[in-house]
Length: 361
Image (spheres, rainbow, N blue to C red):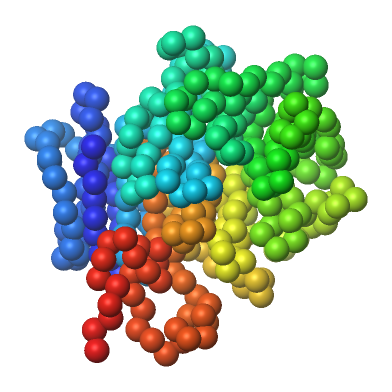
């Protein structure tokens, strides 16, 4: 797989070249504007334009596209930061065809094994993997009416939890709260289920309410610990309190409507909230002071958004473009008072590992 490293202060347009079983990416705007880029293994092939997206209007130092995926639905980092995992439906999402797979990437986002967990091989059952969450050494995957658990090191199945008794057809996002509890969404049923991993994985109905309006994305607020949910139908952002009541954090009425179909939500270490809109093709950032900004648009089907808080990176899979991308996020100027008057370095964008952190005098 070709890895593109570039420095850009303006918008990018990425074209995907698809031939046989290899995928390469080339930055067209980088070529036109003289942006620095490195592209190895350029093939002689007709250009098939499959993905065009204008990326991150804030300063982005590094873009790492990931190809050779198949209908990726989610993209997460392990709590240790050592690995990344991408869930691939491998076809139209929602089909019971046992050909879904999970890709495993290393600490730099390079593939270790694109088919680390592969439905239909070595006795593995995996149809249409959607949400991903990690507790301990287990990677939990929502897969239609089942939550499956796999060893993060070996990929072997170690647990399978059926939700058939709840008449669920398709579970979507799943999140771990850091205390042994998992929460998983049933989008069509307007329902949240809870799995207690500390008590033999007991499954219980946590909340069912039409106000959830097809909940699609799920996160744990880093300060309050409350569940934050985004609605696919209404485009609203909701909060579930400890007594399981629902508060509307961001409305989406006729007069204030900004969103079409929200599909994902997460937070960075500074309390900024990020939202993905799968049909509008946008990524929004909502600051703690409620200021909202579109930081990426013209994206092709961003199926969700997750944040690597340790490296301050944004992770976005593109469902119908068969790719995903990692990008460094800009650190707030006033995040640390002792950095307020200092020059920014690559570490301010989650990219200290690239070197060059010492600012010039």
